[in-house]
Length: 468
Image (cartoon, rainbow, N blue to C red):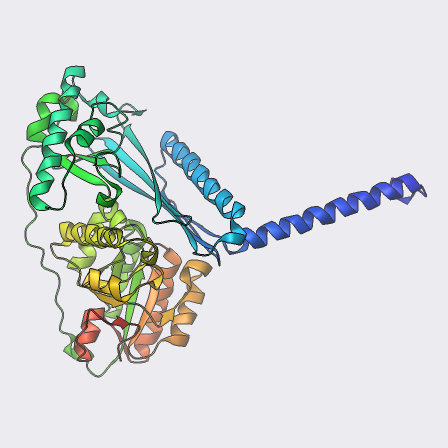
C-alpha cells in the first residue's frame, strides 16, 4: 500500500505544510549564501598547505596555513582557524547592511624549527571598521622528540634561571633605542610586560642566532610601535637553558650572494612579457616553477609576503640566485588604504628587512595588496609600484587550462601578468602559456629587465600597469 496515494485531508495538509517549510528553508539558505558569499569561496588544499580566499563586495577573507602532518598540531591549528573564521563571519553578518569600508580578514602562520623544537605562530588580522586592524596571535611550541607542547619556562634549568629572562629582555629592549631613536620606552610599562611568566613570553622562536621573543602591541609599548622583537644570543642564554636546548654560539655568515646575470641583449627584437607571482614564497609550488624556467629561457618577478619568508627562506634564496627578481608584497597583506602612516611603514619596512636578510639586498619594487595605493603610500615606500594589465583570476578558478587561456588571450608586448605561486595550477598554467608564447616570438623577463630593454627608467612616483 502506498501511503502517498491516500485520499486523506489531514495527510494532504501535512504534505502542504512540509512543502512550505522546505521552500522557506531553501529560500533562507539561498539568502544566507548570497549574503556571505559562500558561492565565491575558494578553498585549495595541498599536501602541505591550505589556502582559503573569499573576495566579496563587503569583505575579503584570506587564510593560509600549513599542514604539519602531526595530529596534535594540525588539530589545534584547525580548531583555532575555524574559531577565528566563524568569529569574523558573525561580525560580517551582524553588520552587513552597515558596512561602508570593506571588511578584511587575514590569517597566516609562521613556523620555524631548530633543535627539534617546532615554533608556530598563528597571526590573525581583521578590519571591521575603526582606525586600525584588530590583531590576535596564538603560538604553539612543540618538541618533536617528546611529542609534547612546551611553554617557555620548560626550556630553562629551573625557576631561578627563568626569572633571569626579565633582565635579559630589558637589556635588549633598551638596546633597540640605539637603532631607532623614536622608540622611547616607558620603563614601568616595559617592566610590567616582561615579568617572567608563560603568558608574557608566549610568542618566541628558537633560531640559529638565539632566542627571538615577540612582544605584541600594548604589551611593552604603544600600538604605534607595533610588535617589538628582540633576539637574545645563545652566548648570553646557554647557561640558563637545559642542556638539550642550548644553541650554537658560533654563527657562520653567508658569503656574498651573487645572482645569475644573463645577457638580455638577445631579447631586443622580441616581444616581452613579465610574469609576476604574488603571495609567496611557497617551497613546494615555487620550486616547480623554478625547476622549469630554464626550458623557456625565462625569469620572473616574485612579490613576496614578509610573513612567509622565514618559513620559505631557502626557496626565496634559490629564486634570487637563479636571476629572478624579488619585490615586496608587504608583510601581512593588509589593505594599506585602511591603516595609518606608521602601520604602512611597518608593513613595508619589515618586509624590506626580511628580504635583505635572505638575499642580501633590499627590494626595488612593491606591489601593494589588492593593488590599493595612493600618492602618500608610494612616497612612504620609496619603491617602484608595479601593478598589472593581465589578471588571470588564477586564485578563483584554480584551473591550469583557464590560466593558460587567459594569458594567451590577453598577453601583449609589455604586459605584466598577475599570478600567485601559492597554487600549483597557476604555476602549471603559466608554464603552459610560456611554451606557446615562446613559439610566437615572446621572451619572458623580470620587471627590471623589461624596463632596461625598453629604455624605461622606473619612477617611484608612478604606478606601472604595463611597460610599453
